[in-house]
Length: 370
Image (cartoon, helix red, strand yellow):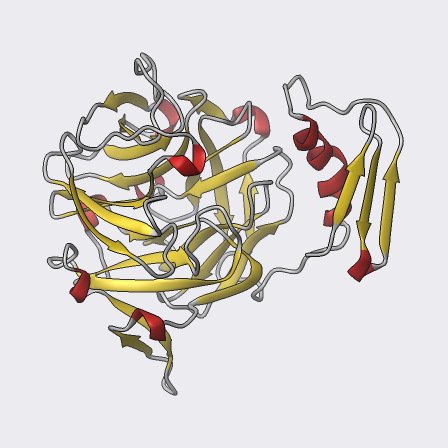
């Protein structure tokens, strides 16, 4: 937290981290990505700052997974990019076997919308290898505004034919729902404490295969979607009472028998996951083939993230994949679409976005080795 840097002509950079006794200097010309346009500090981060920090070997917060021995991503050249200049992409599997997603700060898929939206919608049709996408227009759901100034989706879930959406940047977050696959939306209650960017725990199509009659939602434990906090928190509500603020309860801790303790008082919430200064946006899914709950947790907006697994929604957590620098520049918004998980759980697809050229609906296949 005490690092500071200065820069001169080209990419001459001085970095000082007093707590580590570290002084690093780079003298040289401008840095740039591989055929990519980058901002000054994006290039500095990718080619100088991130590799330097990676040598410090930030350890993962939990021990290795006993189930997932290795995570392997397909080559960078295989990444599919659509909806250029749009990001965010929470996603859920609908009752008609398509997927519903939401984007931010963009124009969606081709043909693009006539105006840039902070909150827009799309339907994803087909398998990961050959999907097609269409924008879904909604006057009652769409919002405008750049970055923090615009409402954006952080989580999506279909339950019994109804779409539910968490919307951030509205003062913590707000619950919204649609009974006609995203054409019109009803705006409900807000969380006014913590839960700055909640994401639902997704199961199968239309919430098939859920562990019980509850719906679960994770968030970093803070009001902002743009800060990295120490903890993730967990909330739940009966699936037929999601619209009632009073129906939601919050994870406190595990008792002596490793059973979850819940409270109606949000002030009494406890952490369900801890990684100090590294809990930012999150996504969650149940991998039925592996019988594991998976969290994709972004540590920041610079390509640091991890994939964590557990036998229950509240843990105990282990680490399947961890990186402080994924190698693609400033990526963020890691999503785990349940429709695109193979029956044996060994093959999945990651949806993500970031700075150009990954400011888009990016899809990358990965495999989980047992």
